[in-house]
Picture (cartoon, rainbow, N blue to C red):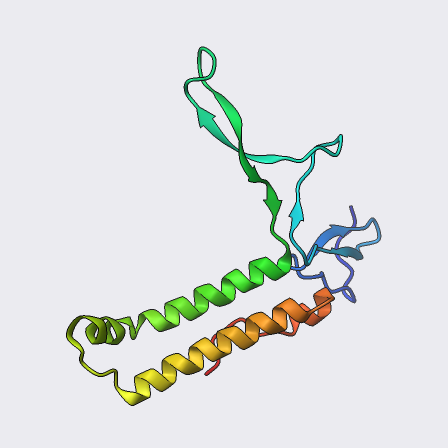
Length: 146
């Protein structure tokens, strides 16, 4: 394979399946935005499997009732937004617990900050849900911005 062409930028592996061509250029195929229920080569539904020690002499993997789902980029990004919001909110969770356990008021600035984080997460999730292309998705910031 050739070395990378100096005028070529490699597509982002987070968003594209990337291959390098013989001439050093890259081909990027966008990853799926939406979730997909997996099927086998014959088109039959696939299910999440678990180990069952009671099957056969040595146990075996058996299907559950849960369909096997390939998470698309939208679901992956929404999970990252939720994680970012949770980590950010965790810093002030003690105020909420104190309010629930001892009825001590949450400071106004903390309540406002938490509401802003939740609003950011809700708006960002809505933006992610609305995208129809990988290029649109790439434009959405996943870091908490309040």
